[in-house]
Amino acid sequence: MLDWIDLALLAVYTVTVGTATYILAAHRKYFHERFRKGVVSAFMLSMLFFLAAYDAKMLVAVWIRASIAFGWQTPGMDAAQRLTWLIVTGGTMVGLLLLAYQTYTRKYDLWIRLRRRDREKEDEE
Image (cartoon, rainbow, N blue to C red):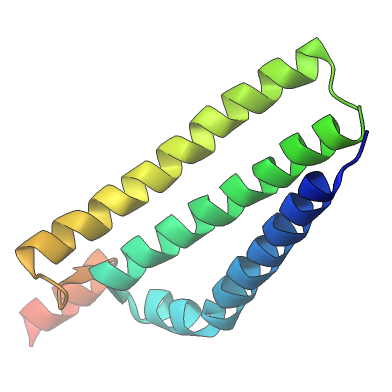
């Protein structure tokens, strides 16, 4: 039986997925430019990783809540949902650990050089 709590949770989870996806899409141009240049901020990369993992986690939350609320869940689906939940929760944990480390060390201005070719050009000059 679908109750108001299930509906409220589905609404909140859906808004969360929508806003997280919007943020990722809105920053796509920034990351595309940074990756093309071959240098990206470690802090922004950590934030991107965390937000993508969190977005995936909330999609799984919608899947779990909807399957319970609408009675679609089977024992096999439950096992798949729990394994998927473990994986995406691990991803958010890794993202938070990266952000916490950078916050603890106050290293917000680290840049990761993605292309060796650019480094070789600089060495030649």
